[in-house]
Length: 248
Image (cartoon, rainbow, N blue to C red; front, top):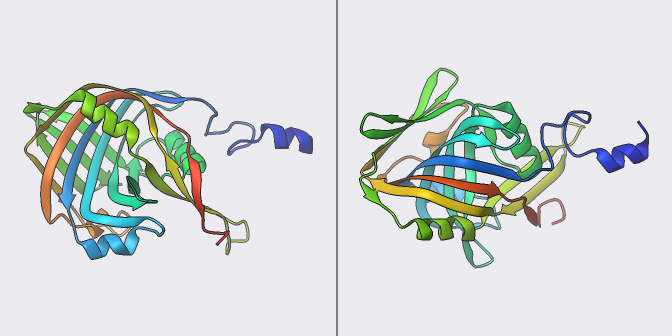
C-alpha cells in the first residue's frame, strides 16, 4: 500500500477493516431510562475538566437499549452524565459509560472520545417497573427503577431538549512512546433528527455500588430527583473540537 493510499483511505483502526465507519450513525427505537439525582458538589468539581464549569450538583444516570443501531447492530449501555456550562451555554458532560458491544466502544472512543468500557448493562420491563441494571464483569454496580408509564411527558419538549443541548467529551489518544499524549481534546457534539415516540415519568430510585474499576459510586446518590423513560429515533452527529489541551 502506497503512502498516498494510506493518507487518502485511513480513517480508523484497524487500517484494512476499521471498527469506526464514515456513516450516519442512526438509531431506531432507542430506549432510555434516565434517573436524575443530587450528589456531592465537591466530587463533581474534582472530575469535571476545565474549561467546562460545574453549574449544579445534579447527575443523570442513563440506561439505554439500542436494538437498531446503524453500523453496530444491537447493544445496551449505561453511564453518568453531568450538567455543565461552556462559553455561557448549558450542556452535558459524559463522565463514564459502560456497554456490551465492542464495535460502538471502538468507534465511540476513536471518533468522539466517548468514555466507554466493556460491561454488562440491561434495560427491561420488570412487570410494572422499568428496570435498569449494570454489572462490571460479575459484580452489580448500579440498579435503577421507575414506575412504568405513570405520567406522559410532552414529546415535542423532550425532543427539543435532546436536539438543542450540546454534549461534551474528553478525547484522549496516547502517544506510541507510552509517555506522551497524541490527542487530548474537548469535543462537542449534538443529537440530530430526533423523533420521540413516547416519554413518561414516574417514581424512581437508584442504587450505586463501589467498584475499583467502575467507580460510579464516586458520585454518590444523595437525593433522587426523578426519572424519565423514553423511546426515540435519532442520529448521533459527528463532533467538533472546542478546546485542544496540547495547544495550551
